[in-house]
Length: 262
Image (cartoon, rainbow, N blue to C red; front, side):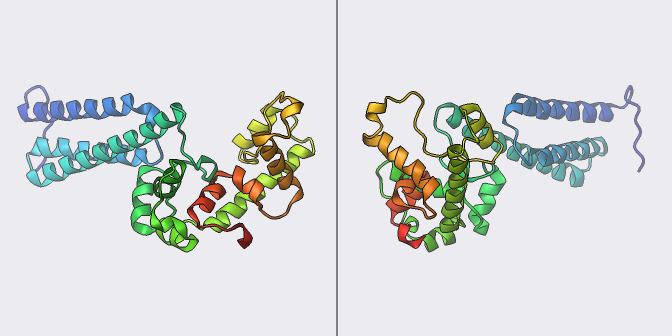
């Protein structure tokens, strides 16, 4: 049956259009208010919401429940997932702003999206968030980690992370960065930070500026110096470097990693 569009005299059309516009304003308002928390994949839910709106208008205009019910479900699912994604991203940024960034930021290209985290729990894909929660955070709080954290094979089976490979690859990146610094290719802090930002370098143990020479051989400063020059001079990962590498240090503390395996 053809639909008429006499908006001036068609009460059913007015109701359908009015309801659709109200829902549209709600959706746009939610997206606008959370624009700062947009993450990858949100566009699909927005498009899905717009498709649901089109079906909602059609269902209200023709008063067909077979169209109305799917339309409402599509809108609710897409809007619900969008809100969850906004909250997920907001929580990540809030922790970073509070001085509690994700522990393994430098080991990943970007923080996992909500879907990546959910799928990782079911598919066995890389799950840095669960590893951080179960293994790293308890160790840093002097609490016992999960049982799966004490063995490299268990970690790979549970969290989808080949830690021996990851640690070795990060060690090689640290070594290349330290070599560039020792050769004077990164002469100032700005170049060093820019190199890290571009993904060509990683953080390496370095002494703070203007350190008193009298304390260079003491405590923490000596550990930092030894680790830096071990990166330059040694070809294998050793204890000095491992102590300055967060992931390596945590794996040693859980009992999963032995430096003799490198």
